[in-house]
Image (cartoon, rainbow, N blue to C red; front, side):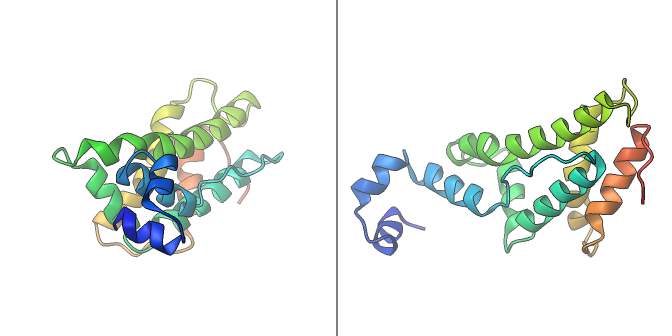
Amino acid sequence: MSVSAVAAAAATTRQAVYRRWRNKADLATAAIAAMSEAQPIDATEDPFADLVRELVAFQKGVSRPGGTSLVGVMLQDGADPEPRAPFRPRIVDPRRARLREILERAAGSGLLDGDADLELATSFLTGSLYALALAGERIDGRWPRRAARLAWRSLGGRPES
């Protein structure tokens, strides 16, 4: 990906692209964030259903071609820090915050234990998909509900289905 090619595809100039994005890494992570299904989902009265919907969106986002590979690149110690810098605040942090908010809402409503480890559960939820991918397991459309049920139970909740 070159900034020149992006500018040509957008029928604009390189200078116009650089006015909006600091550098190629900033442009790339903005493009990934726009494609990542990372938009907030409206909260309902059912935090468990909200959790499943958030995980469906997460799975869809990382299941795009190269999605899990991109995460691996971002985790490498030797990776260029320039593209890593905007990756977390644009892509990782918003997803984690939404998952955490759903779990906090459930705990506040008495659906989960008040002393449950919501931070670790948040990491488990997304990490379980990456672990399955690394193990070469098939990740099908049942993963979001399975992961949500396991996390919910481990936090002291009883999912409806």
